[in-house]
Structures are given as structure tokens and as C-alpha cells.
Image 1 (cartoon, rainbow, N blue to C red):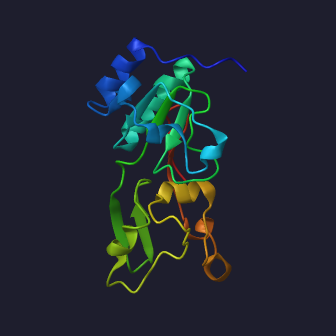
Image 2 (cartoon, rainbow, N blue to C red):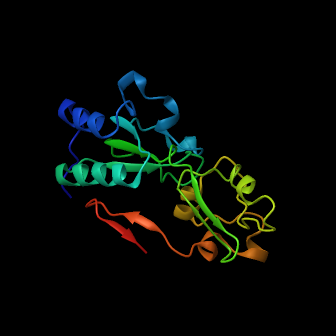
Image 3 (cartoon, rainbow, N blue to C red):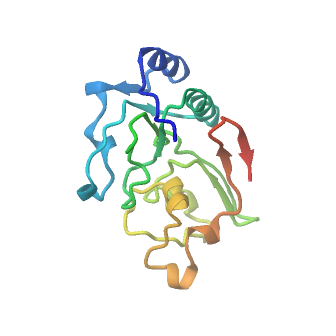
Length: 183
């Protein structure tokens, strides 16, 4: 496998055009972005942290990084225990923490459409008064819906209600090429 290209100043300039005021480098990167909650595996500092707010921004960043062989690590709240949000290869951390809108709660069809950064702690507020709840109940309430989907989280209610995959009917995903798919 070809080694990943380190992020340089021209890359940062591009990222700053795509995500104005949401690109962090060097000492501006919080230590929170170099690990998840399983800290005994170590700390891996990314070259940059980018905070996306839209699917189109994610697509533009992934397309650019794919063309230049820059490592990309997606990240939500960083509450996981599996290392999935840790930049072990350097490159960029592409944070979805600002993508936290509940786009629709459709009581008739018993569905909700959410962005990946919606926190489990906040999601029940959007269901108040509907008679519905989100059954997967992992222990960490500051986890994101995107992280739940990535790890197929379940928690204490999994035996009765199932895990995250049992509640996902579709996804909008961005491939490494930048192509956006509705699955």
C-alpha cells in the first residue's frame, strides 16, 4: 500500500476555502481529537481537524483527499472504544460534530431523519410527545447517531429491542471518491 501523503500548506489552503473558520492545525488542535475513550491504545495526532457542516463539504474534502492520497478519519463525539475515530495514519480528522440537525420526525411512518452528529442525549427531546423512543441505549449518552451506526451500538436494551442496525432504514453516504449515495 502506498504511504499516505502528509498534509501541507496548499492542502490547508484548500480546506480553509471549503470550510471557512472550521480548519484547525498544530496547536489549535484540541487534545480531544488524538484519541477515543480507550486511551490505553495511545494518542495519534492528526495533521488537521476539519469540522464539516454539510454533506457537500464532506464530499469535497473526501474527493480532494482521495485524489491526493491523504488519510481521512471520520469522527463524531469520540466516545467510542474501538479506535474508529482515531487518526492512526495521520492526515485529517473529518469531524461531523457540527452536523447535528434532526431533519424530520415522521410519526405516521415511524421514522426520523437525522444528521450523524445528533447526540443520543438530545435526540429524545425531538421525540417528546410522539409516544416513540430510540431503543438502542449505549451507556455513553454523549455519543452520536453516526457513531452508533458505525459501531452498531446496542446497550442494555439490545436484548429486547435490538441494536442500531435494526433501526436504520436508509443512509446518505459519501464515498472516498466524493460521490454521494442514498442507500
